Length: 221
Image (spheres, rainbow, N blue to C red):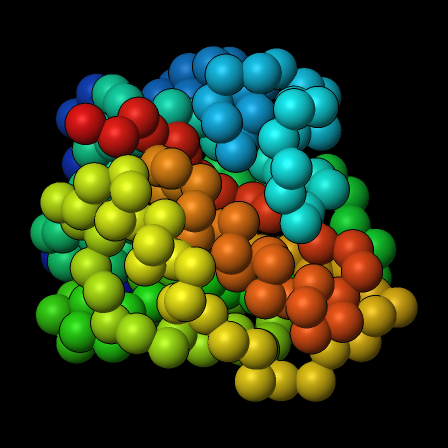
């Protein structure tokens, strides 16, 4: 409600064209959707209509990604994660929702857990907000069944460091129903290590159908 009131007092500017009224106007949203990613979410190379190429060995069987982390999408994500632009979760979540196929009503949405220090810095859990919107719009359940076992920061870490951190980063604490699908939600995938090992933790706990949805993919600098 506070965010709605602020939008009247100080209207948002589109991250793409600067138009007054919304963080992402319809035209810029169309441009992002029209340039959707068709590359494998795991390696970023192979193309596949399932979001995973045939050469990547991962625990999930379907993946969706809005696009590359560049241009307008990069600015919107950056403002959301690093400039405390809380309201950005709505347009980002809607972009993701529009890219995800129709899901079974039994699907359980699972957010990738955010490092606690990041939540304190921002004042909100950016991934949880996205996951809640996906669950709400699709009328499916959300459960935080995965927790972090460490507080390692990925920003600035090398690819090797990210993989080593992710291997031991996740633990399933909730009860897993093998008869229902689980949809992991994250904002950005770089090496793919986070979603790879979060999915493996779910599979080890008994999940048999695991899917992944992320806002953007970026190459590791």
